[in-house]
Length: 419
Image 1 (tube, helix red, strand yellow):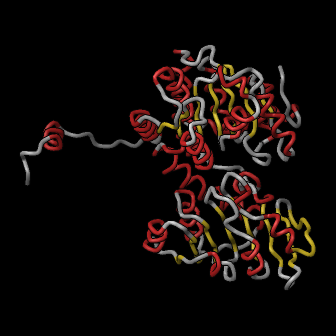
Image 2: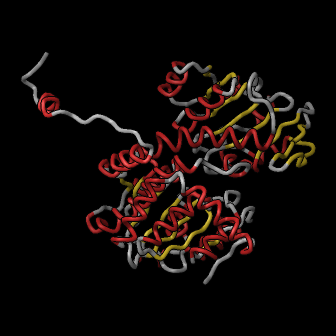
Image 3: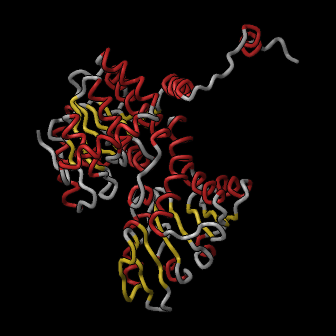
């Protein structure tokens, strides 16, 4: 079997971690049981470009149980858990191409290896496989019937492709599912980002000023968790509605120009480029700590920081300190500016990824069943799938909810009854 992992001897260690994660993924477990019985993906070649973590491993195992021929590569050079990658190869027979810390050339070589089986379905976190197929391997597009996309950054790229009429197959936006962005983005990113910051720095959060750049679902979650840890939270935004919401949620809101000199920690989660730039780094106080929790490290203008610095050195694992020429202030960058929750921690808890990856599995099944009638554009996860995942999640948590009575259904469907 073709694969490329750091050390296959780590497989047993990875297997234990995959099993630990699976214990809190009841929705995916139920889907796997049905997939094994019904084989809805039988003969379907799936290329998955996702963060190679314990949770992703359980998704890959579920897809294989459903009959899919799965190949997996990393969607970020620093997000791979090497023991998990080894376990997928050794214990699950899933060709995996991922090494934590791989360079750019290796990253794209791994994408090439993952698409070598000529995929029918793509499964992305950041749209790199879709982009690569459309720009470098156009001859493989004829085999692809559709794809799924996990994250905000990827959906932005795909919608741009669809608007420009260059997208060659339909894609399900898993990120737009309520059971994904309202939980994974908010609660998952909130907890795992703060976990990554604390693990990397061992600095006290309470009493510090945490600047959250962007107040989408991820930004909401980070701001909430930072506030819960005792931080004074500042939000920067470009959207007046989100800015207003942040104010109403109890946070200070200001432009980055004003936040830069007062922040102790800075976290970017916008999906955009250079939201912290050279002029902002230059204004930061001595000891400022900067990180990114968006998909790509371009949210930070790292080349500008490098130009401003007289020296740079690694002071802790995952922490690089830049000393500025102008004033001697030290600015520390976490995890090379890549997703801090995966670069310096372990990513989202498995219980929240349970819903996200349930959407991925059911999204792939939906593509296989419906691709012939779908246009070449980005689609939301169907509402019935979204609600079914929420229902299964509640059941897995042992939580029951009410149902409408006949009288209530009649009332909601009528216009005559009034008050």
